Image (tube, rainbow, N blue to C red):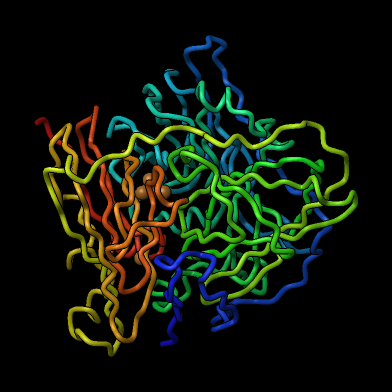
Length: 495
Ligand code: C2O
Ligand code: CU
Ligand code: CU
């Protein structure tokens, strides 16, 4: 078995500025991965349309999504079979406001079961859209709840038992944006599709006949399916035209299992303004970022010093994999708005560690073939949390409603399998207390729902469990790991 080398050195603890910028350690072009010709930089970046609100009252929003099969021409003359929401690949952007009643009809027109999970939303368990809420082929699902959280860039995707990875790979994912009075008032770019751009970054691997080459063998499960083609909003190496002013990018690592390092080819700096769950207290200047599968980050880039006509490339590196020129940003017109990034964004309601009354520990473990702990690892495929694989009939943790808890999550790396994991909790936005005992970097000090746990690291997070009782998931967001059982259930119970 090939090993996916993970250069953890300093990524999480020493700051990204000092992180090793390694590429080409190991080619992810594995069994059955084809190299097909593309027309790079000929297509405009597609902007997922905003989904129409079928309700014209200000305090409520009603939507309709159809989960369907489709196809797409990623390569000339080779049609790829795909899945999409209201279309062939990916889905429209859903935009709501804090306080709104949210209703949606989800119709499953796929030939198989799916679910629709609202990644990052704080919501009643029965509308979470995890594996406990299957929508069988041909049926409808009608969530109805109130948005109770601040402005943020979230997303939605399927989450059916054992099918998440494959369905996301086929194209099921979309952005979910919450706005509120703070995002309204902040003087930041907010014209969707013009200077406020969603970027769903994913990689894919194809067969020679143009079909997606999803999991081909056990290696793909353990390593994650790592692609050799990069898609942004479903397009390969597209071009985006913007003005010579401030541009906001809402970036989602929507890949199945890749960890991305993202930077501009010209080392252009940018300001990070938001993490998974909303605005940071103040913008953080950076020149590269690290995003694990499922994470989001919002940045504002200032192109006012760029001469008109110039193109700046956004580079995306898979940790331990390929380097891609993902997107060319063409600065093709004078600045249309004269805004300056505010120095303060939103105060953070920081949860003090002393508030926690319960501590839990989670060991994410990958036992490699022939690695240390033989036997069980080989039999069970080696991916587990606290030694267990997901069982929908078992509740792993019981949390009291209203409690504040600290969860210590450790990626116990074995000799042969140094895998990163990406821990995600449903229902809550947590805060990172520390990584290996050290304070997280400034851009990781805000609200989070997904956190990278490099091999050998321990991360402590703190969270309040409020408003709703019921069963939610926690899992590795490397979707091949999740589908293989690296997932558990916590139930919030009446205090
Ligand atoms: Cu984005 Cu449980 O998932
Ligand atoms: Cu989620
Ligand atoms: Cu994992």
